[in-house]
Length: 250
Image (cartoon, rainbow, N blue to C red; front, side, top):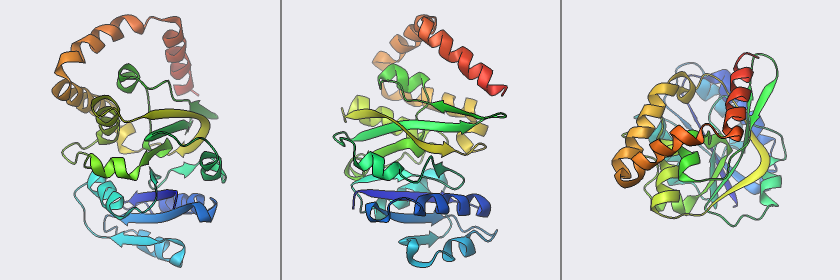
């Protein structure tokens, strides 16, 4: 099995249905599908059960937060790569997994573009070349990230002491501390649902991430803070900020 697609959910029945439909529209021979529910009380379980054996594994039980639920999925995964498409998120098209499978999958972490709905239209955020600096200051959504299952397990999955930014902190640990190989692909992978924890608690998430960076990489943290003060004035970065600010009003 090449891919394991994992969806975690808590009391988001409508979003869960949308996500399941998106996942099941992919080429079925390429993936297994796992749904981890946190003991929802809004009918989410009935939604999931209505798809019968099209969902390979369905678990509904209390958990200790988002990353505890995601780690449960990792423990069950049989695919070579894991991607999290949590309730409300969708694949950008029905042939995403096929397109990725046809690419040169020679990296531990493969990241594609993410589409985000704005007031008018969409903004597609393409992944920058992955560096310690870009991990600090760019957006890499787990909805568009394929990570080798063996790497997730080797490094202990997501840090459950973190509540908002454990996914991007994992990337920092895997790519910078353990030298796992990254790759970006020019493909829009996911349609990101607004209103998730990382969005509604954006500032708290960034502070959590910076705290993780400073604690685990104290010798280089100040260098990257200093670099940001200057690199943000590069024309490419200024144009990107203007584009994002304009998009926020659309």
